[in-house]
Length: 397
Length: 64
Image (cartoon, rainbow over all chains, first blue to last red; front, side, top):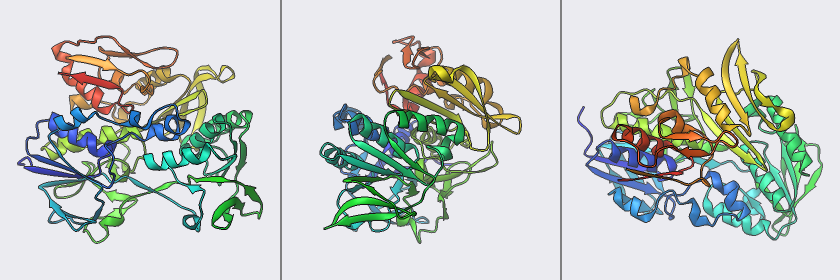
């Protein structure tokens, strides 16, 4: 295979930027273009719901690279230009202003779009948190608000609740699941995390559907539960999940399912790749399709995509990893810590708020979780989560 | 090659230790990165660059 002369990357957040850097590091000398809907320099998202929302980091601290580092990439950045359509066969992207960009190889890194509640767009005081501007708008509101209701019991909702509570707001978290992070970490750890929030004074309303929002004069006043109960609020955050940002790919010729469907090499079509939150790929170790919404996946998958663009033939077989920081609890989750697994303490002591657990399904260890024990969790991962899920260092491939 | 780490940005993932254990370690108590070699030997350069590239906290900076 001839290496491509030109590469166009659509989306310049962590996954897109990492792909660009890996291409240069692995010797790509042709042209490199990054097209991004954002006008800002690439920034990191995990701090948005924590340090940026709390105000402990200036927004600039989230910048992923300095101006000098970006210049050293020798890439053209086209900012503030959302892609609106793709011709996959011609590898040509049309932007909102009607500009057409094409390249020998194309990388889709458009990430996610936050899900919304019906009626939320017409109401002031209702937020989602996806980008830096969202975080700054929410922070400005929270510094003036008294009562926050967070809708959604996943990682983002729980982190926002923790940050807002630390800022002194009265916080209620409502969600369909029966425990916090139940979908991500299962009921045992979810219940423990729920107790941490309850001890800090967060009102948890779990296992109930949210029916909608109530407001007067265009401003939200409450979240309405399916039971008819109203949770009064002067600020609401909707954190009920996200969808892959694939709207612009309708009619492109690519297969769209839960994200851009790729093969095990992260290839969606000849010369077209997808990376990060938007990419659904065949995981050869697991024998099934996977799409990961975590920060680590963005950079790890980028390494494989860049190598494959340049002619390698590497399957992407990650051990998923994410972390979340809430109050003084730092959780590290490796592998597949599913709700169906049996959970046993492997190190430390839950009573001392410092421990690591193993998740087992069918006798096999499928996940490792550290609770204020990051190093020990990583060591357990190395001992317990290798083999079928391939933990080989990327650099050796 | 010079390696600089930003402890405030480190999230304790340990990806760097998985990739380049001769250059990086983690503190026992909180998992924050420990730089074992701020000027790693030549045979470590590829691994260190890879570790910096995949760090989910963007906490590792490599120069020349």
